[in-house]
Image 1 (cartoon, rainbow, N blue to C red):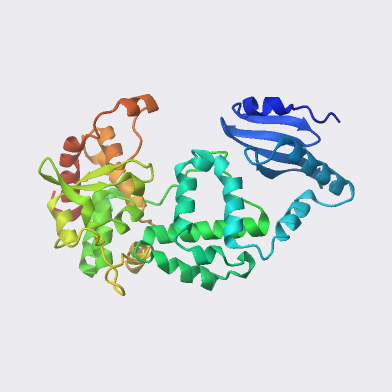
Image 2: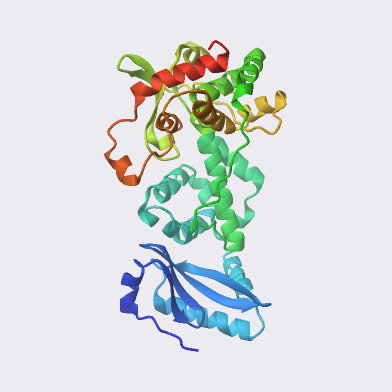
Amino acid sequence: MSIERLKPSEIEALIEEPGKHADGGGLYLQVAQPGQASWVYRYTIDRRERWKSLGPASLYTLKEVRDKAHELRKAKHAGQDPAEVLRAESGKAAGASFGDWLGKYLAEASPHWRGAETGQEATHYRQSFDKIPDFLKRPIDAITEHDKNAVLKVWDAHPVTRRKMGIRIDAVRKFAATGKIRSRGKAPEVKHHEAMPWRNLPAFFAEVGALGTVEARALQFTILTAGRTEEILGGTWKEITEVDGLPTWVIPGSRMKAGKTHRVPLTPPMLALLGDRRGADDFLFRGHLIRENGLRDEALRQVMKALGSNGFKVHGYRSTFRDWVGEATDFDRVLAEWSLAHAVGSKLERDYARSDLLAKRRPLMAVWTRFAIGTR
């Protein structure tokens, strides 16, 4: 078996070349995309090929991972599963703090994110956890679900952030227990949400309105704006403004899936659902228990459940809107995609686009509103 094929002087250049670069003895430099690389160990056990991460190339030297690969080969020769050896080593840190494991998690996961260790996602991770310093000091193996839910109350006023932080805490805890992170090497399989046929929408919209609750109004607003749940629940009054003298909802890029500002033309029925204007930092749809807080993440789903959703999902109304545009109107497809905050055209075309077609989208959203409320 040929080993130590790679040269230390080559690593910097190889990190820019996507693929798996073999060093021999089961050790590889895996490059997901230029600049994002990790060391992996390949072995076979019970006739099954397995790959285990040894850490990011930005953190571990060639010599360090060669030593680790040598240890794993010896362990396998002795009848041990290298995966169990790595897991046991992770367990040696029992008693280590959540903050310690957060650092290890970011070192392992962030090289696979856009911008790597210094990118926006890694930066947001660190900044958000800085708000709970006492939690970071706690031994990770002593943290319970009750502890997690208690610390998440810090973000009760921001339901979307609260949900994200819960996911992040779980990710670090899982990594500490198993050494596993969610792989982002391949694009995730697209999950299609069940969408209500557009012809059925007006009747359903009326049923929702008959409930007369703040949750019902939020769902109606979601349908009319073709927005995502997190955009609606996290929306505040400072985002409701005017563009060229006309009412517009301007959602900052920090709250959008694509990271870019999105402008939504507002119609009179949309504004009516919002009610009287309140303070700039007030949520568009406030919760019941604490008036300063927004609705819980599950609020819109509960409305659907109360009315018998027949398997339809809240996110599916975006597809309902898209189907309606394509099948029942003569509006251009591009206007529908802009309304959904979808990427339109090639990257080059998007880079040179100087308009989000807001003015042309106003008539589209006006006709959609009339259709949904049954006054077409």
